[in-house]
Image (cartoon, rainbow, N blue to C red; front, side, top):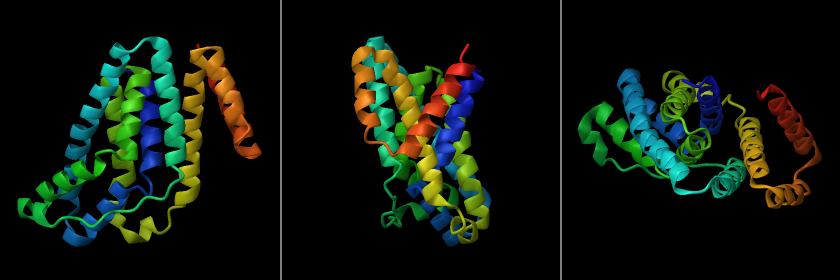
Length: 222
């Protein structure tokens, strides 16, 4: 097991999940059923299934494209995720039909469907392609989802209303931007030119943070 891919996957998804529609769904399910353990088990099973499929797609991408094209795909994907993190999320009206499957079944179905095309699913695809470590990424992203959702299931609205969603999303966006920048540096001169152009659009304090993080990651790299 690769500790780096596990920790990065856990941290990014835990940050990205705060205020996300699936976290809002956890709050809704907890308020509706008031049975935390079946809800938590449903979230775990749905996440493992969903992120397993996402990581498999990410792993396939690594075999389908050349290293340079893969670096472009990852760089642009992570930068797009950084922008997406700054967009507030909302939960659409939920269908009542899954309720007939019980609390566990309703949670599993609702959570699996809500996670389709969600930020954390897209992040899982990109992380699996970046690290090429299926088990580590699925374990990490699943752990991140549980870290973000279990407290909501138990503590509900009291905790949800106290979370500093905007700063957390900005931090997640910064991490995605750093990963995107690192990926684009692997594309050669064209990627570095794109980074230079994008740097002019980033606020000065954000740019300083990104430079510091890149310097730290470069220092820690073997």
